[in-house]
Structure formats: C-alpha cells, structure tokens
Image (cartoon, rainbow, N blue to C red; front, side, top):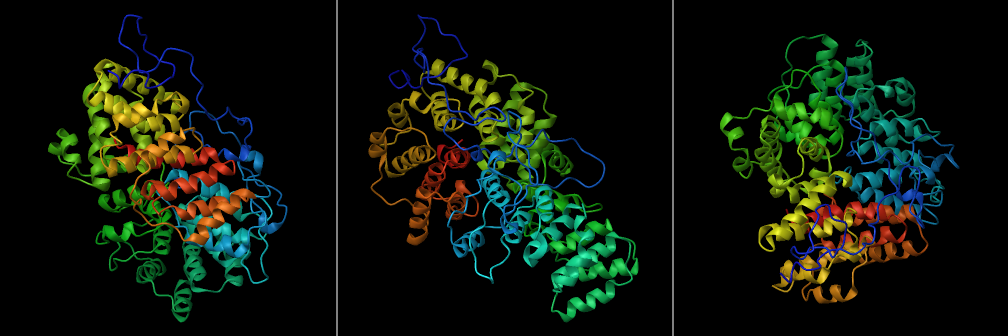
Length: 609
C-alpha cells in the first residue's frame, strides 16, 4: 500500500470516492505537462526551429507507383510549418527550411570548421531505423543558413547535403533540394538524387540526365542514363552505354543482364542472375518487370531502403521477396503504412499459426512474425482476443518499429477498441505504442486505464506494468516530471536489488534529465552505479567538441555531432551514457523536442514491455 500512495500527480479520468482507496495521484491541482504548441506557435523561451515537420494523414492507395518518400508517423495536430524553397543567403547554404519553418536558423553552423562537419556527416549511417534520428537529420540537412567556411577544394555543401538527404530515401524533399542553385554541381549529390528519383519512379532526374552525363562521365551516371533510356522507350544506344561502363570498370552483372533484356526486347520471366543492386532495381522498375524468383532474400535485405521500397512495388515478384523488401523499407521510413499492409496480408501463413498467433510470435522473427500477427489482428473481431494480439505485437517489437510504419498499422487497429475494464491488460502496451507514435491524445485514456488498474490491484503485475510506463508518460507529456514520486518508483523497480537494476534505473533518470526533465539530483546520486556502464564511448576529442559547441551555440554542428555519437541503429541501441550526453547537448541548444523523441526510444528499451 505504501508503494501506491502519492505515486503521481496528474488529472485522472476515473473518479474516486472520498472513502475509496488512496489514489496513485494525490487529488490536488497538478502542474500541466510540457507539450508541443499548437500549429504556428512555439513554447515560451524556445526557438520555433525546435519543432519538426509533421506530415498529414497517410493517403490511401492511388494508381501508379507507390509513393516512396520518407515516412513519419501521423501527429495529433496539424503541421507547424510548411516546407518550401527559400532564397538562399549563399548558394552553398541554401535549403528548404528557415527558422520559422522548422529549420535550425541561419547561424546553425556558426564558425563550425567545414572539415569537422564533413567528417561528422560521413560518420553517420546512410539511414537509421529510428524515426527520431531521421527526422532530426532531415531538418539539419534541409535547413537554410550560412555554410561553414571551406577551402577551394571542398565539395559543394549543398550538394553534400542533397546526397545525405537522398540516402535517407526522402524523395519529395530531395527533389525540392535538387532545384536549388548549384545543388547538382556536386557529382555525389547529383548521382544520389538521380538514383533516388529513378527508384521512386518519378523520373525527374531524366530531365537533367543529358546535362549530368556531360558533366559527370563516370560509370554510375552511365548506368542511370541507361535507366532513363528505358523509361523513355529509346533502347538503341543501350549496348553502347554498356560498353562504356565496362571500359570504366563498372561490373554489375544483374544490371547488365537487365539492360541486355531491355535492348533485345525479350519477354517472359527474368532469369540468369541472383545479385541485385539499387541501379538494377531502378532498371527493373523502368522496365516494369519483376525480379527472378531465385534472388535470395539476403540480397534484398542488403539494398538501401529506397531500393527495397521499389522492390516491394515491382510486378511479378515473389511474395516472399516483396515481404522482405517492404518490411525493410518500412523499418527505415521509405514505405508508408498503406503500402506495407497489403504485403503482410499477402504473406503465406498457415491456419494453425493464425489460430495461435500469440504463442507462435515468440518462435518467429522479423517480417514473418509481423505478418502472422497482422493477419491475426486484422482478422479478429472479438475485442478481448484482438487486445491480446495487439499487446503481444507491441511487446515483441523494437521501439523504433513501434514508432514507424509498423506501429502505425497497430495504432490503426487500436483505434477500433475503446479503453475500458475489459481491456485493462492491453492498457500498458497501448500507452507505450501510442506514445512512440506521438499520439498523446489517444494515449491519455489508455494511460488512465493502466493507472486505475494499478490502483485497484494495489500490487502485482498491474502495478509493475503501470510503473514501467511512468518515464515514458513523462517524456510523452502525459505526466509532469515534478508530479512523479520517483523515490517510490525506484523502490518499485528494485533499483537497489543489484548492480544491473541500479544501472537501468540510473540510466532512465539520466536520460530524462538530459532530455530536459526535472529530476532530483539526490535520486541520481542514489542510483549512481559503482560499475562502468557497458558500451563504446566516443573519443575524448569528439566528446569535448560537442560540449564546447553547445556553449556557442552551433546548432547544426551540435545536431550532427550528437547524432554521430549514437549507434547506427539509433538511441535504442546506444549505451545510455552516450545517449544522455547527446540528448543533453541537443537540449542545451534548444532542440528539446528532438531530445525527447530520441529519449522515448531509448527509455522504452530500458523500461521494458
């Protein structure tokens, strides 16, 4: 009983009589949680650049190629800014976002050395399964501002940023960036954009291809030129282009085989190759042909996310390959939920697996696991059984997946269920899912149901499940940090039981603090572990430079250095020591909303399902 008394302070949805049990929240007035402002406004004392772009509702299926632009989960409110092309201060620093539209401001690079910025960007993975990482990096790349000073031999900074944006698979914004002056003067940026344009199927690069081939005569641009020839129905010069590619040392058997088929006008199923590249996929898309059935799934999983999304949209391709491709693309934000759902439904699943989806889920992994759960979920009509499948799907999924397209599909199914006593066991998982989806409005009643269940049970599983939600609820704006009784939370999660438990609790509190939440320093002292946290710590120079950049502040430099500290798989896979340092830096330059979204993914792993 003592554990429950006064655990939290927040509004409650379930009335308590004066003679009833002591509520988990004292019933006095509560401090309002910090939430993002309505559209067009910003919290007092913060830069509007801290707010990221928010897309509208996911459109339904449309004729033609599947839209493959970078996906972000739908927010509970309208966009706070509109993306549009800006008149650049200097061509090299041009972008799509100024400070009022979600950019990081004209001085985002301040006096950042160009070499450091280049190395930091180069150290980042091409893309990330973390939606929070992709969103922040995208804003950095699209921000308009004075470019860092560079020597005469440095790459065009706009072209460098275009290349990184194209590698994220964000076709819509890459197309817009490509129209800015000097954007296509850089070979790397021009080729990355052209490749993405052909993978998404919009073909805008073909309008520029003749000029690009004159300026950049390498084998890569020759390959993309072949794709444009096929798109335009002109195949007479394909064999000549292949000869040029061979002379330049380009070796891509799959692409060459496809090009020969296109040049010869051959019909029927493709065969004769098993290795596929992004360029080969772009060519197959231009030919409107599927991949050979003998292509192994491992080849598909090695493709970049935009190429994987294109494979998922190819005709006459084995369902297993399309499932693997679509699942990978959705995990990296290049396939929207509307295009992912049919792939899961088309997967081959046995009737026995569907009947026991909850039990089978623990024995399967990856796309197969999600296909079983999704088919069972969409086919179930009894709310209690549907709730059990939903809870299992949330429990076995990584936070990054729950924050992306897979989580969106689950949230759509959850919207058909009303929070109530019959679904109390679903409440913790529903809250976790909706917070990671940035759907605070829908998460609130499920969080209240979890709280009420804990209040009624007084101990055991409902209480423990509720307590694990507390850090997520604070980060998600459901609960003010100063309304949480952290001392009782530490008792409940057995922070003093052993070194691993202490480290886990300390890491959660440190991440909340780094994201800008108020946590009593004495609690951090209580949980300070006596063993070193596991994981790789960045080099001392990078660590110190990030700290110094916060004091200037250099917002762009801080953002890329902070992202460079994280593991390739994002904050959920990074040691908390490093994540907390990165979040603290972001918070220090006014990027608190980005820090909170990153912290949500990290804390979701530590708190557990």
